[in-house]
Image (cartoon, rainbow, N blue to C red; front, side, top):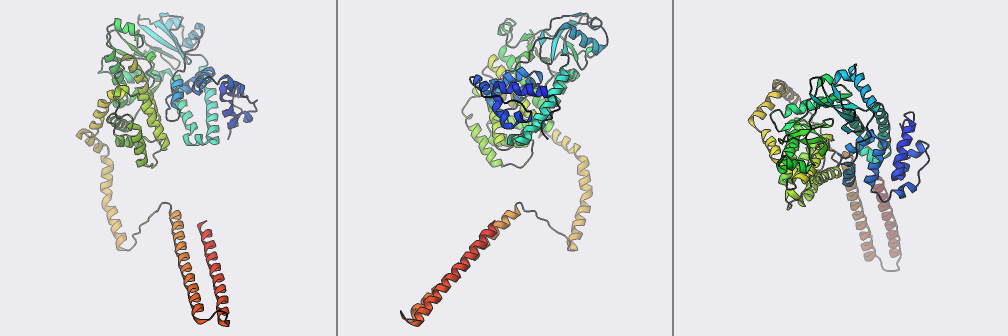
Length: 560
């Protein structure tokens, strides 16, 4: 099945034209997409024009030009350092999500459609000019009837339809690449698009973001230094999100931070600790903690905004990831390798020794470096690369948390360069690892599996009795499945053939030797007996040669 031509052929052509214009025409041509869509091939002029720009920069510009769906694709690709080269990852992180705001009359139409009433009945005051504008939505400042200030996030009109069309095209393109390229067969881009679709659909439903904010706030109830805007559910729907308005200091506004007497180093450490707790303690973390999504209040409280993209980590994987961080912080090759192998999404048997050797080589260059000089993003990218080379596919949540940590590390470099995310994560990870071996956790594990243990113990006498009866009756059989038995059998056959050949060759040599000795002892040169023996010798040699030739040919055929 190829690209479905019935799906918005005009949009297909627009996508292909944009990528070709920015120097990707040759790749598109090699995939056969031009021919399939019956489009004119774009020559090398576009590629020459773009030759001064890097591949990553050209890709970023192409995605920005194609609109919100492709900007989101790029942002998610920037989290996939396991398949995207680091230089392209860094460029994709620059993707701009801001666009021209849509008109106020469209804002009014969305709000009144969602709440089935006039905008003035919902909000006492509403600023017409947005305070932020992005590809999917824009944010306005407003005041509720009770006088409470709120931020209102309104979805861009028609964006669901645009994204729906683009997702259909992405599904077809992924299927096309999976069938046409080895790279596609390895990475299964169709599954990636499905994951991306789920993420994007969740972002389009603002009630999901509201639920994320509530979950986040519950997780940090005991930590008064962390805050998330409270959701007003009376005025929240799929396309409108009304939240508490918080006007904090931007993390990059160093002058304002100094004026408010904010300790930048302590603040940076608390932000990093918060992200690490979200990942390792709660298993629910902010997947896009860039500076625009973090504010600081004058009392030092850290505010996390925009929880549209979050990551979730199961309890079992939290323990494994904790082992990974403890291993990295201790520069323990074996612990790191084992943890990554446990995270393998494919769960196929891999060569653990080779992987450990590769991890050892990777970590070796960091052994003498202080943590303040280690780039966490680069380190995690190297882990992805080593995993990829060993056929290990890491789960999506690991790539999201790696992106989150790398983003926080870049923030630390500006606020407190001497701090490192891995150092901050170590005590939190170590605590979780130790907790997993506590009597309480072990007893809890036993309690959860009590029913299974009970069934096993109850059934054990029956299985033992059945086994003994079969043994007594001589019906006990043992089945062995030897891996690659055909290869082993062929090797054995070749060994037997070589042995047979050696025996035949030895016998021929003995016969010929006997003839030579008999000839030399029983006949004088020129006699009739001598001539007869020489003739016999020639016949014997010819026969021996024929036998050897037949054996060699049969061995060659057997090897095939």
